[in-house]
Length: 374
Image 1 (cartoon, rainbow, N blue to C red):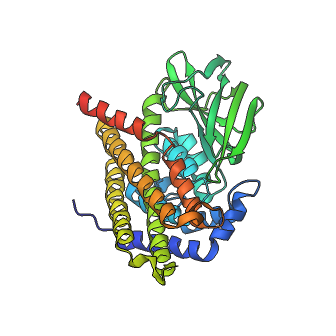
Image 2: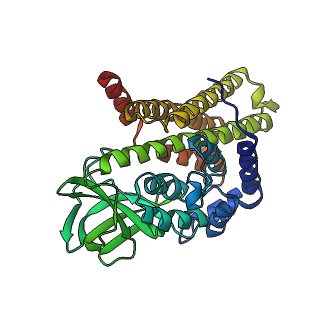
Image 3: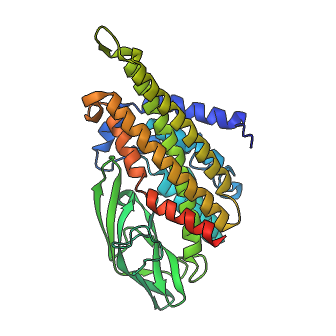
């Protein structure tokens, strides 16, 4: 398959590259990681202005009608910049759910707000003890009047501390469904914390939380298919983010090998280190190919084919990302794990990506199960 990026796609990447070079330095990123919110509202407003918040949404909702390859290019740049902003949670995951399954009223209410950068969303789905199994849902939705009340708890809800609206999965009589919940509604308890890579997450409790009759997304009992598709979009996006991070680690390591001297010569002169550097380059380009595969397959109608392609890409990219990250740290020596150098922070982010929405074992099992089923 031959894939060439359009002039518009390349221009968008160049715009993001210049933004991160000018306004999102490593020192700035460290400062906002330690702030109360954990991300930069000014940067989020810039994302809205240049259009990446509108990219995957239809034009009738203020979007640009982009596809998964467009999102992949954006995610690669966000990875290079080590961005802390909740792009995957709000735009790719929750925005994708609203776009694909929301009612006309929900789409017209939420998507323009996401596009303008005025509303942040987070998916409250996974629960303690469920690992990555999306069917492990104990949260209950009980009919009350014209709406429901939600009771239960969700664990490690990414970007929940800053979210205005939560998309919550819960069991009702017809099966598992999705509901829109105001993050400040009575009975919603959010305990936020910082993750290892500087991002934010929260454990969220729902204590008889009232939701209106228009809060359900999609059909009753239809959440499982919707969540699986949305998670595949997010996993493909994280593959692209990993590739962006791997590219930076590769470049930083090469520069270090050219400047760090030992025995009177740059250590890059040593053949064994040249071989390791070459292996990093190869691993990064192979991961890029798999990220492209995931992006081109994530829009297919056949859920089994989509899941198999995304699972295979995730398993492979995670293995290559682990290799590149470890090589970068080792070739930098002891400073590779210090807080003062960006290599350590990129490595932490790669590690967290490898545990988000499925680790390597989960993706390999999903891939093999799909092969057996076919």
